[in-house]
Amino acid sequence: MGFDGSGDKVGQAPQPSFDRWLRFDPQTALVDEAENRGDRIKHLRLTIFIGLIIYNLFILSNLLLVPDLFVLSILMRVFLVTPATLAIVWVVSRARARVRENILVLGLIGVHALPLGLFWATQADLGTYVFGELALTIIYGNMLLGLRFRQAVIFTTLALCMTAAAVATKPQIPLDLQLAFMLQFTVASLFSLYANHLVEYRRCVDFTRALCSTRRAELAEQTTQLHRVMSKTDALTTLPNRRYLDEKLEDWCQKDQAIAILMIDIDHFKLFNDTLGHPAGDDCLRQIATVFKSLCQPDTVFCARFGGEEFTIVMRKSTELAAARLAQKVVSEIAALAIAHPGRSDAIGIVTASVGVAYHPKGEKCAPEAVLARADDALYRAKQLGRNGFVVASQMAAPLSGHKLAGL
Picture 1 (cartoon, one colour):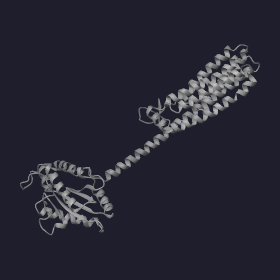
Picture 2 (spheres, one colour):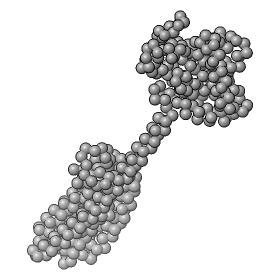
Picture 3 (cartoon, helix red, strand yellow):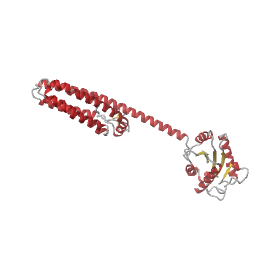
Picture 4 (cartoon, helix red, strand yellow):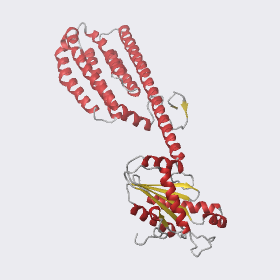
């Protein structure tokens, strides 16, 4: 049986959960330990130190109630219980969660055993009154130290059995007094165990609910981020879309840096679709998109699908020569894909691309629309010159100077 963040039963749902012993599922337990280990250890250290001081103050009570065992009480408390307790503090600060909680049970059993042994062994007239000290260890362990519920049940059961054995075997205690002692101790044990369950249950519920809320928030953030990415991504090619291109271009043009824009158009793409069909056309665009993805560089080269069979590359912090070289690379690599184009009337027979390049130098006011228009004019000129090449806008005065520049 499991409980989700609301305390409701769930089946195999991958939600944070805990069982009837208030133990988290393994994954949630790891998260709990990672988030709360520091606070848990800090609480244990402080509570153990305070408990040790109070525990040793009961030496004064032993002087009054069990003078025959007073020296033994001092020796056991100072030279056995105190060093063992300090060792436990050192161990629990370094041990894994499960080991840490089990060591606390062992320590508490030892702490409970000393006054129980004094109660059983003393011959003093007031010795039986040491019994009142025994319930304090139960309250301390279950409520102040805050044992995990499963460990609290183990500790309480063992302490109850040890106490019952001591009361039953101690000589010269009337039966009615034995019954009264055990009734008092049992009620104190059950009350403290119930209080422990209430606290631990609330801790588990609060943590699972908080973890569920955190995971829902993370999922919502991931979903929002995914939608944001999808709204800027072309579904067919998975390249950035026109919307993202406009945002990036606007951002880069606002900075005082050189900008180059490459407008790329797939040659005779309508004929490709008419001849082979639109599914083949879509596959062609996806293959070509791999070329642009390989050219992208996060800080300097941005590639996007402009629309239809047109693509755009934006470069910044570059030169006109570098932009021309990139244009030549685009033309060459698209041709190298060797995608058959049976609908072409020329002798090429494969899919090619034409590129128009516009460059805007650093230090001049840059209007994105103006640079795009110049790149588009250069693209139109590249098509006039026979396609499968590129033209640089600044060289358009000479009809062939920007087309298939040698040596790039």
